[in-house]
Length: 138
Image (cartoon, rainbow, N blue to C red; front, side, top):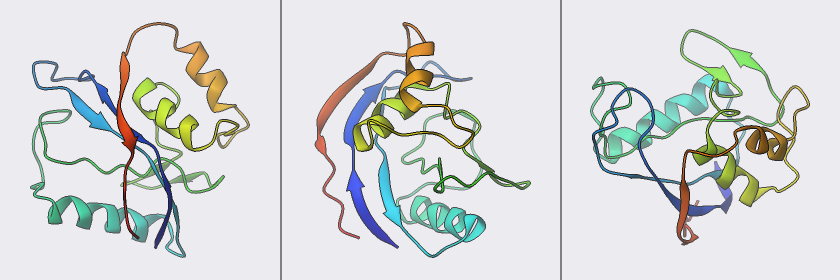
């Protein structure tokens, strides 16, 4: 796997089931890989373990790292463990903003422009740029 590009980091308030916790930092990476969906998910989970995330835990609760597989090209995929594109990619500003930084013309699988999905969210889900693109060596 090779990292091609990184978005800036963005600070966002928690969303989901556990709102009483610190803000999150979110970013997106564009990678080149020969891995299939399940193997790539396994690689993401391995990174989480390496960085101190224990299996289990409260859904949407505090965690040291959360690595999500959002898109795999224009692939649409579904298994018990994984849905591509990520089920929430169209409804989360903290996902769409860094994705659009990487590719302002991004078209999601199914044909919807990511910019249109972001515009449809309206206000809410504040996202504040917190720094330059991440320096990730792949």
